[in-house]
Amino acid sequence: MTSRRQFTLAGGSAALALGLGAPAIVGAQEFPSKAVRIVVPYPPGGFNDTLARTISQKLSPEWKQSVVVDNRPGGNTLIGNTAVVQSPPDGHTLLITPLPYSVLPSLYGAKMPYDALKDFAPVIHAASTQNVLAVRQGFPVNSVKELIAYARKNPGKVNYGTPGSGSSNHLSMELFKSMTGTYVVHIPYKGSAPAVVGLLAGETDVMFDNIPNLLQQIKAGKVTAIGVTGSTRSPLLPDVPTVAEAGVPGYEVNVWFGVQAPAGTPPAVIARLNQSIGAMLRDPDVVQRFRAQGVEVVGGSPEQFGKLIAAEITKWGKVVKRAGIKVD
Image 1 (cartoon, helix red, strand yellow):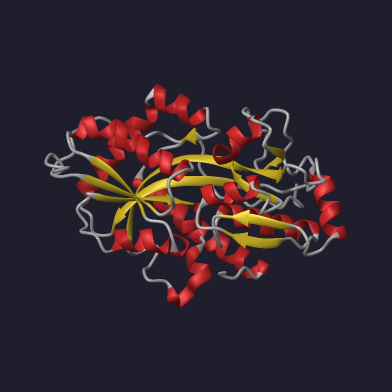
Image 2 (cartoon, helix red, strand yellow):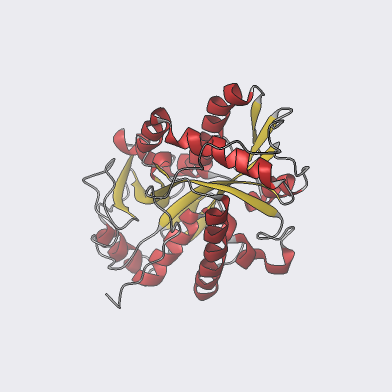
C-alpha cells in the first residue's frame, strides 16, 4: 500500500546467512592471544548484556582465552562506544552495537566524539527483535486505542520511560506520538533495567521496550502489554496485537543488535570474529535461548552489517529531524 508508513530498524531477518564458511583464515591463527573484552554500553540486564554474556560463555572455551563482559553505561552509550574507539585495533576489544548507535550522529552532530562509520569495523549483525508497548499496574488503559484517547484528554499528564534519548524505546514512542497526535512526557533513565524498574514502581505510566526486557514482568502480571511494534504478533505474546492492528495503521518498528571492533582491526581478525560468532549463532542452544526471549538470530557478513548501519544512520537521521528529537 502506498500509504503505508513503515519505519524498520532492522533490514535483516533470520533468513540471512549465519556467519561464513569453514575455510581457514590466513593471518588470524594467533587470535586471540590474550583476554577478549566485550564492552556493553548499558548497565547489566537487557538483551545487549545477554548477547555479550552468551558470546563470553560460548566462545571462551573455543578461543581458550577469557572473554570478559565490561558494562560501561552512561552518556547515552557514548562512554562505552568511545572506550572501544580508544582501544587497540587488534580484535581483543569488541562493542555490542544495538540500533541506538545509528541514531547518535543525528542527535549529537559535530559533538560526536567519534565517526560512527569510519571509527568502527562491523563484525556481524547478531540478532533482531521488536518492542512491546506496556503500561503500569493501576493505569486506566488496557488497549492502544484507550491509551490514545487518554493521552489526548490528558496532554502532558502521561509520561513514559526509556533507557535514554535516541534509544529504540524513545524512537518507538516519538513515532507513536507523531502518528497519533498525542503528547506524552519523556523520562530518560540510564539503561533499560532502571527504566523497567521505574515502570514497576509507578514512576512512569507507559513504555516501549524490547520484548526480552519486559517478558517476565508481563507474564507475572506486573505490567500490561497492549501492543507490539512488528508487522506480525510475537509468538511469545500471541494475544497481544501489533500497534498497527490495534489502532495505528502503518506503525512498525523492528530492533537490531550487532558486534563491532575498532577501525583498523585486521581483516583476517574481523573474519575470524565473524566466523566464530556466526557459528555460535547457529548453535541450537543459542537459537532456542534467544527465541525464548523473543529474539531471532540473524548473522551475515561484516559487509552486510556495515551496509545496514549506514542505511540506518541515514534513515533515522530523517526521523530525528522530522520529530524534533533532542538530547535530554
